[in-house]
Every structure is written in C-alpha cells, then in structure tokens.
Length: 259
Ligand SMILES: Nc1ncnc2c1ncn2[C@@H]1O[C@H](COP(=O)(O)OP(=O)(O)OP(=O)(O)O)[C@@H](O)[C@H]1O
Image (tube, rainbow, N blue to C red; front, top):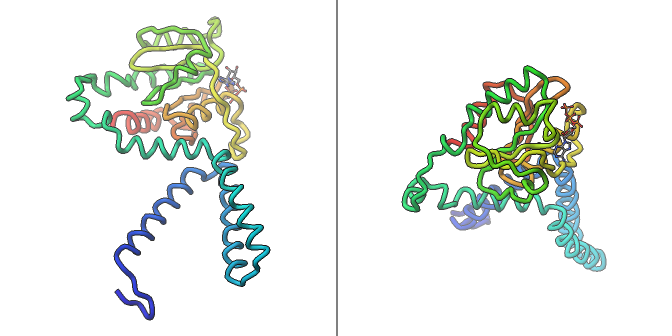
C-alpha cells in the first residue's frame, strides 16, 4: 500500500498493532502504581534522546545512551513485580492445564466448582461483614503459595463456613493475618502476606487491605478483605483492589475462578 511517499507493507501494520497491544498491556499493568510514573519518566527521557539524536548533539546523545543502558537494568529491578505479572498473564492464557481437554487427558477430573467452593467462602465473608469481624481470605489459583502458608500455622482442614468463622473469631489465637484456601481446603491461618506500597490507595485502607492487595500483586491468588472497622468487603485480584457488595463479590469470583 502506498500513502504519499510512504510505502506500507502488511508486516508494518502487524508490527505497529503488536507494539500498540504491548504498550496497552504495559500501561494496564503499571496503571495507578508508582511504577507508572517511573515508566512515564523513562519514556520522556527516551523521547528527549530521540530529539537530541536527530539534532545531532553527539555528547548529550552519548550521555543519554549510557543513562538509558543503566536505566534498563534499573527498570527490570523496579518493575520486577509487573514483569512477573505480565509473564504470568501470558502463561495463563497459554497454559495447557487450564484447557479442559488437557485436564481430562491428564486425569485431572476435579471440576472448578469443586476446586473453588466460592459460595461457601462468600457466605462466610457476608457473616464476617455483618458482624464486623476483620480478616483476609486468600484463594489460591495456579501460583504456589507455600511460602505464605509457612509464615502462618498449618491447618489443612476441609473448608467449611464454620471453620472460617471460628478462625477469625475474636477468641481465636489465629485470627490475626490471613487464611489461605487451596483446593477446597484451608491450608493455613495466621499467615503474613506481602504488603503493597501503592501510594494511590484510599486513606481508609490500612495494613489489612494493603496485605490483601500485596498477595494479589505477587501471585495470581484472589484475596477477600473484610474490614473490622466498617464491615465492608474488598476484593483484590491481579493487583487491583475494590470494595464490593456480596453480589459483585460472587460475580467477580465466579468470573475469575469458574470461567
Ligand atoms: N502483612 C500482613 N499480612 C496479613 N495480615 C496483616 C498484615 N498486616 C496487617 N494484617 C492484619 O491487619 C490487621 C490490622 O489492620 P489495619 O487496621 O491496620 O488495616 P485496615 O486495612 O485499616 O483494616 P480494618 O478496616 O479492618 O481496620 C492486623 O491485625 C492483621 O490481622
């Protein structure tokens, strides 16, 4: 295709579309975090570098080239969580074990409804919310959460609403921290989660909410946070946390685990 003096091949269109797609996903991953400002800063320096290079300021071009070379390594360190989430997202969409056909072939016949007893968890969260009982319920998806289970006390009990409520009751010795649910079992309680250091969170989000967000940033687990202060339920998935009603909680959890 010829537009004026420009000759455009189909590979150019593919190239531009893929870069736009990639930039969109990078934006989605870093949106709202401190990393987004770092990303914008780096992008601006890169644009400045292109201008300086086009004008022909050699010394400044060299300095900026050197700065960006070192900056690229610094970016990998700064963006390690975002890079991890991006790779996870790519891995998730191509994961053979997520495919029903392969799951059956591998003899893994447990259905998602059995693996993720969402209704029971929502019932427990609703009761906790009504009684202003604070807590974090982490639901494991694909990622290994052993490291976080080990920070607490091993339970390994069949999941039930009563056990969740007992663990978070004010008389329980394990009511501090999070419980971790995996494969229809409560794996551990009293667990310490990584705390998110996102600047843009609402002021009423304290450490409990930051811990719920932190685990969703570090892994693909979903975490439900029930506020002791106001009884509100928040849900953190893929590094985003929001306050939800019971209906929204059910819709989002089903969408994330059952579809
Ligand atoms: N890193 C962590 N991992 C797991 N749980 C944590 C962590 N940090 C704090 N918590 C839990 O959060 C509780 C403190 O909650 P805090 O009041 O600071 O948070 P909040 O988000 O304001 O919650 P709430 O709305 O319930 O008051 C602690 O008692 C503990 O149970």
